[in-house]
Image (spheres, one colour):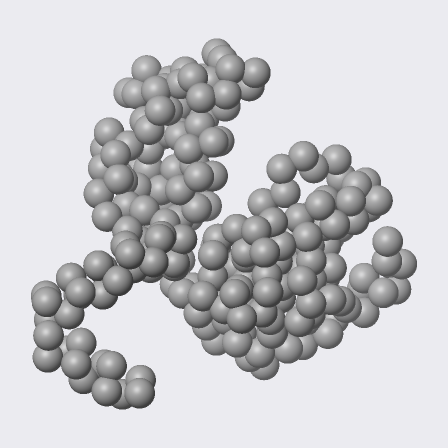
Length: 246
């Protein structure tokens, strides 16, 4: 556990680099304090910053948050800080392209730098939540069920019977603002599993890939087949791209 002085000094250092390197990319700096407590996002970012360039396990961050007074069972802040806020945090679970070279395993994270934003970060300028009435109307339209798996809010999950369903606002297209037209209700499991990888239709079915990082989780044969498909689709463009890379 870090002292108050260590936490505030680390945050000041992060804020200074953010203003120089990241603010122009609309990377979001979490607030340090809410009420009388440090925010979870700020604590996770500070913890990763103090160990920048080193792998940190999800369990390690969870234990740190517990020491700081937060009882978090499913720590997702590191993932959100990368994909939704733009910090250059690599995830072994997400399968970032650099993980193999840096030996980052599933369940581990690494803050690579605070001088560059997360490579696939898109400034979506999106509203974080719908207003209460719009959200309730949308859930009612779906009969208070997850659009993807069909589990009903307040009842046992179809996929995880030991869990009672709470619906979350899921993006249909993660690259667009979280508007009423771009939102579907999803249970926490389906919303978390998508990890902003996919674009969904109104019925919660996957239409296409949103984040190309997802391809890296595929078998080698699938990756090769995808390369062939992309080359066949636009041979001249692919040939020029490969030429530049080589």
